[in-house]
Length: 396
Image (cartoon, rainbow, N blue to C red):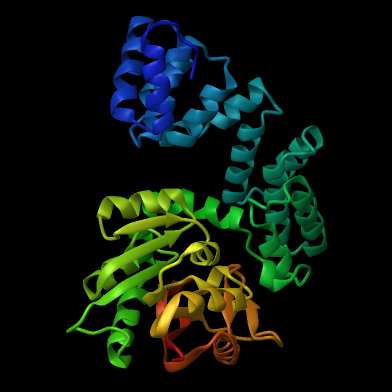
């Protein structure tokens, strides 16, 4: 946001910092109207409108009309307005090495089957910005898709050097090629980033397009094996990797108290609006459980194992927090061709685990498999995803 003297600036800063758009937007709109010939005020208004989930193109177009030579305005319009699909191309004329515009133009070129042009744009950007994580990773992805594996791996390794915390999920691709350990394919930074960006459309995409049914299948499994009861609520339950609350909604009536744990603040924000959980915790499931001091009667882990390679720490953490006789209901992708240790990774980068591996790891943590069902919790590429539905109980 632009600096602006006056009594309202502190209010505006607090509102923007806390995401209070009901307070911030009227102030920004008034400032834009009061200084109607200042492009920066219109750009600030557009930025707040985008953050609030509102239409921002009109304000951006006003900023561009006032100052057409500012690359960022054109780039933002290209990202948010279907009628402005050439904005990035216009921007590259003004600034041929503008990173966001180059990335947008390259992605559009690949989408239009103009591979040579896409490669050319990304290579030029990497020459001008060798430390560009996005250009390095995206170029690696498209070389990978083109079958140029060795070149792609070099770029993946370069991306990991640029950002060792791995926000782009480079380790996943290296693991898929057998270069990095499968057990370490997902960084918490990457998982958090993906689900923060996915939160707004998560429910509609998962239940609509992908036909997600894991919560209902686990609910029925829990009732069938006695982990859940129609007559008596479980005093304390925890939904691990709760996301927006899809599993919580299916299990809420069977629990007196339900806690949700997830590392994505944006997913938790959606879950909180649904008022399903008595308590929400922002953290990795294993780390959060390690800090808990009260035992649970039921733990739920719907589509969590696909983001964890080595499940030994996960099972130990869950077992440590379950009452003796308490139950864990979870899903796992069933591998088509598991590795020698029972852990696989698919083309989509998701982890899969063999039944033998799951039973062995759970057993080492004091959890006994009481029932298992095979089925599909959602679709993948239009096909049912082979899924294991497991009911495990902590030994007394």
